[in-house]
Image (cartoon, rainbow, N blue to C red; front, side, top):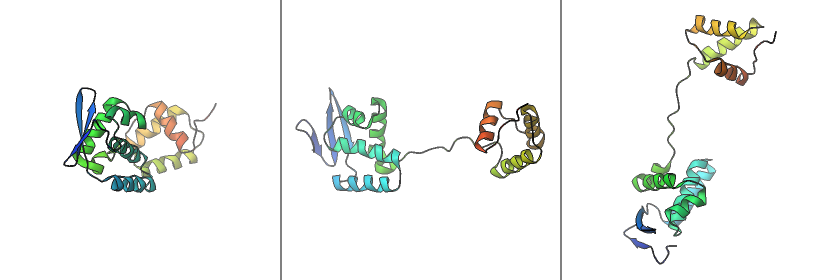
Length: 159
């Protein structure tokens, strides 16, 4: 539903946001948007669901700020999401994660390392660091290494 102060022409919503006008391209009909939200929920894409609900709020006549507040995001984020929708529709709103930095040890190397630790227990932190550096040529920060070991179900030896 578009409010009386908003205009609709050629698949574009013109939403009055204070003194500024913001255009939102209508890539999908209201029903298609509801179907897209349902599909994203079934696929457990919570980030996409939230972003599509933001667009739905726009479709329902809310301003950009009101639509952002409805899904709990800041004004800059709502502007970014609106531009992403305008530029690419659902594909533009879909989160793109870079995947992060690759691990220093491959999963096979990490499993081999854990087996070594299990065979020669108990190990001190210094011995574990030396073993990784000598065997694999990589170095981990002590805190990060402790975190990785705990995630693998291991702990440093206690004296």
